[in-house]
Length: 493
Image 1: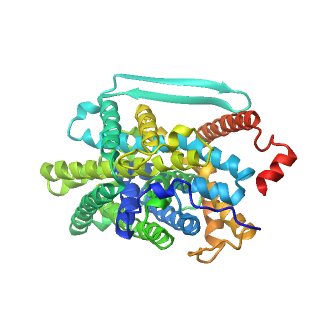
Image 2: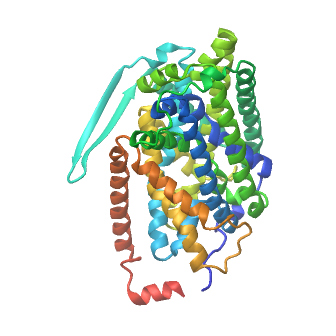
Image 3: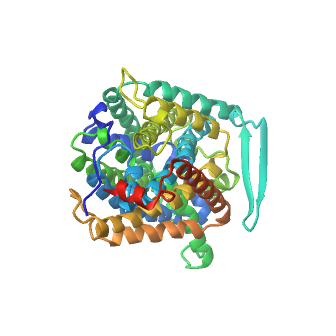
């Protein structure tokens, strides 16, 4: 069977301006962001004590397993679009691959802006340490629609001064990204230094004031393997998975990475290793200073989540709390920056392939980047800033797991079987064990949480609507599965 894999038509118009260092820094910016700084109380609340560290460990192992999937696919198919390209080629660009790649872009219309919005909302949440009035609620509302045989589909929105700040951050990021990729690579390195300085300060301060009695103050039955233990672990892993996400960001920029068959796997796996070590150290240090019961209360109330600010306040006083809060705001912005950069390239690749709106294939005539795609994602992210942080995270993770990560992990195995002749500069270690473990981990997160049905309904509705849109488009254009047998045979020749 001859492979259909070809370089993207527009790849020659993009600049290969990012080396291994810039790509790794971009990934780490994406992964760290505000997530681990503001979600730690949520993880502690899910498991009910410092045993929440298990959630971070399990999340890191899951990231490694899925990271090996992305590393192999990214090296074999080093072009813009990442998962869109992988799904298209794995399942066949004229049949199921076209459907699944369309559904990936369709879910990305929701999950990518949600991901960007969570960074903006989290940034505004930390800014509330400076200005508590940012948390003042002006309006809130919950809309519910009853779905036959499925139950209610609920969407809640909230308006605060922090919401306005989050929206402004979205538009400011668009402004910064409106330039050449070579300039962006340098800016990514600068932001990475700020992120590393912040985490380094937290870890050093925690180690110098480490209280083992606080860090390992486990409640009774903390490690009893009961149903509630596994339910809590599922909830903790959902949040940890969100915090580790971003390791695959480099795959979206395949046409802009130098020596991509080597640098994509290296940047991806190095960023996972570095970030996992930093997360575990940082969380252990904070637990050794701030009693976990205080974090539990913050996680349950979903307010005062700026735990690192409180951590520094206890050690050094108000000046340190204010300083670290500023540094975390910079880290959060670095994440928003890299997320919007990476995601904007995916609709661009799909449009070049004829599987998305043509306008998204447009490249800026001077700076040579997909400006229409960037603007569209940024505006949608601004709209999602009106959601509550915990709702946005849960919806994002479930939608992405069902409509991207599961089919991609399964797809790697399918790819090995159906297209063994495709060159693979990097091959998954211990194949197929990591892919199977990734699939099992994703299913565990989906169905071993409290109120797991809520987000499953979101994903199901998005899937069904996406299927309907695809079928209508295919019927009108005479494409698969509505193409005649002769036309289909001609297309495959």
